[in-house]
Length: 139
Image 1 (cartoon, helix red, strand yellow):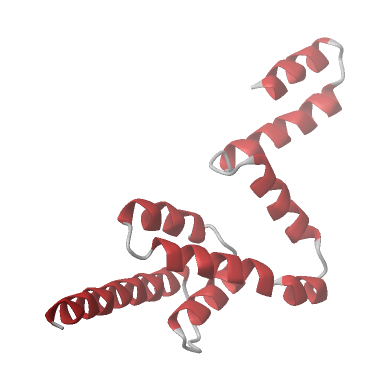
Image 2: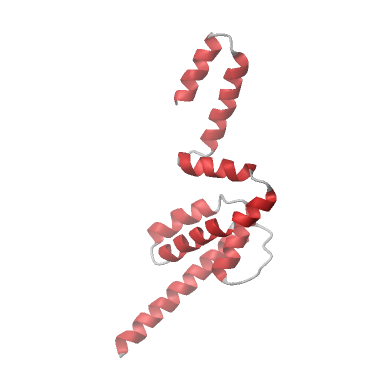
């Protein structure tokens, strides 16, 4: 990674504070290496927003997630990677997404419960769609 090379260069220049900062940045980036630069920057910007602004702007991302979930319902190849990304959402946003997607107002206590609700809803929707296709073939 380029940051590591820059860190070595700074260390050789006796700029230990800057090198330490780059170490922290590199470690943080490695924890989130599954995100694109845009996704990472969005997450950082969201983390710095005030809570009142954050709640106000929440609807747009939730709607985007909902659309992605609906588009991926019939494709395990699309659904599973999406679920992996959803699991990394902050609790509040994940719980809101699960409630919106499932059409409920549950008080989730754990991420796993919210993810399971999303999975169950997706399976149920897929089952209904298969039944409707079967019925439409009769007529």
